[in-house]
Each structure stands twice: as structure tokens, then as C-alpha cells.
Image (cartoon, rainbow, N blue to C red; front, side, top):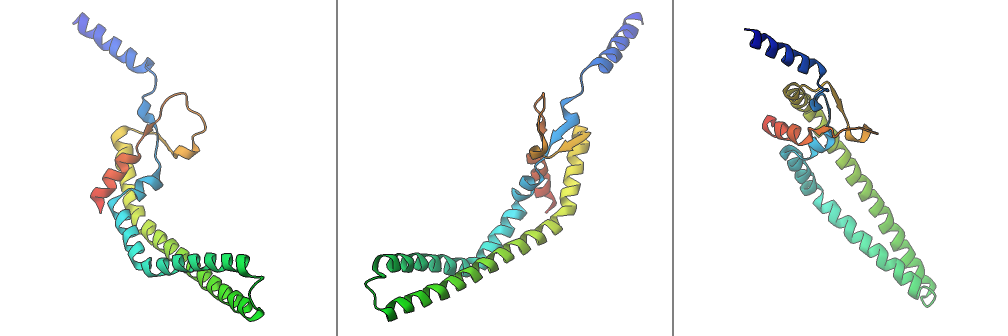
Length: 168
């Protein structure tokens, strides 16, 4: 009985004097956790497929703009006034269309990302809570927000991604 009491006392003393567990503070890159999910990959592929025509047109226009610019720089002085004016008008029209496409593509990406984040937010909250509960995390920080740590902080990003994949 005496040995058992001594062992219990030593165990309690060790529990009180041991340094805090590494799991009490952890990092989570929630953006990476979300973007690495299967659902995010599907969403990006759908967006890519939906914008493929516009993207291809923009790339083609970009190449044509470069070629026209080079032609104007190299041959501009030897061109007639009409040829130069026609080339400049063509350059301006293609430039305007290129800028329009760039804006449309950017807006579509932004809308798609916002829609995905709105749908994913409840699932992200659920996954984060599961990981917090599992590891007994008291403080969870973004890796970009950690300026200094004397110890290696556990990174829970991959585990959150795994849970998110099961929630979709």
C-alpha cells in the first residue's frame, strides 16, 4: 500500500511539474488545408474547364500583341503611315480585348473562390474542432503569424485536410 501511495504521489508530482505538452499550441494553415482538399481540386478543375476558351483567347491575344509590338519597333519607320496607323489600331483593339478577358477571368476566379469558401466554411470549422479536441490544443495560430517559438509547433494542416476530404 505504501509503494502504491508513493507511486501515486510521484505520478501527480510529475504531472504537475512537467512542461506543457507540445500539443497545447499548434499551427494551422487553413488556406492550405482547404486548397489541398479533393473538393478544392475539383472546383479549380471545373473553373479551368469553364474558362478554358477565354484563357486560350487571352494567351493568343497576348502573343499577337507581342508580335505586333515587335513589328512596330523593328519595322515602324519603314512602314507607310497607313500601315503604321492600322497596326496601332489593331494593337489597341487587341489590347482592350486582352484587358477585358483578363478582368473577366479574374472576376470568375474570385467569385468561384468566394463561393467555395462559403460552402467550405462550416466543414472547415468542424474539421478544425475535431483536430483541436483530438490534440487538446489550447492555442491554434496561423503559421504566418508566428514570429518566434522556442520549440517546434505541431502543424495540423495535413490532418485538417484529411478530415475535410471525408466531409465532402
